[in-house]
Length: 226
View 1: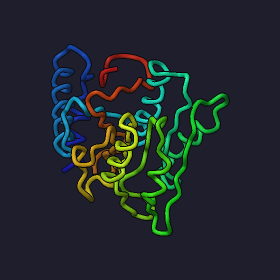
View 2: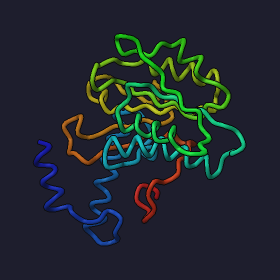
View 3: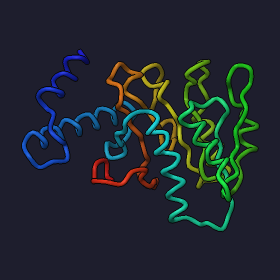
View 4: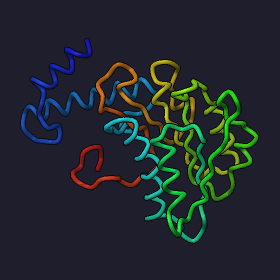
């Protein structure tokens, strides 16, 4: 059971997986085995999986990590657009709201409405994307009303209008209930969380497609590639 596995790691394999001593190396092997399992579940490469403390960190790392990278290395002379919906989880919605309140902000922040069933109208979605759109973040399955968005179709629409637009999907609520395949969805980033599939709380992951660049939220050692 999950409880026995957690107990095993807590009592026997408690070493720091970034340390060179024996139990640390064993712990590292177990971390990498877990990374491979997650990669198989969502159909990606294992080096595209980054472990986090949960869905909130995964969402923040995707959104703020990308925007911070663009601030540091991208063009700063154009006003950029970022798009989400009004029914996102607060770990996405409040990030966008905070950005919209920033003084001297360089972003147009778009909050798309949904219909009475919780679905984004694809026509409004398409018309909201322009040549300066750098990020779209829309959840796969809503945690309150259960609406499942047409993410694959949205990605195709977004890329057809602006191939440089990055698409992030919060799939925390969908994992384990519906198929979550990043290659099929063609998203650039995708967030998941362990506790939604009967795993331990405080564990999540962010899929980042190879070639997509994000900037760290925290600075320290070299865990999860820094």
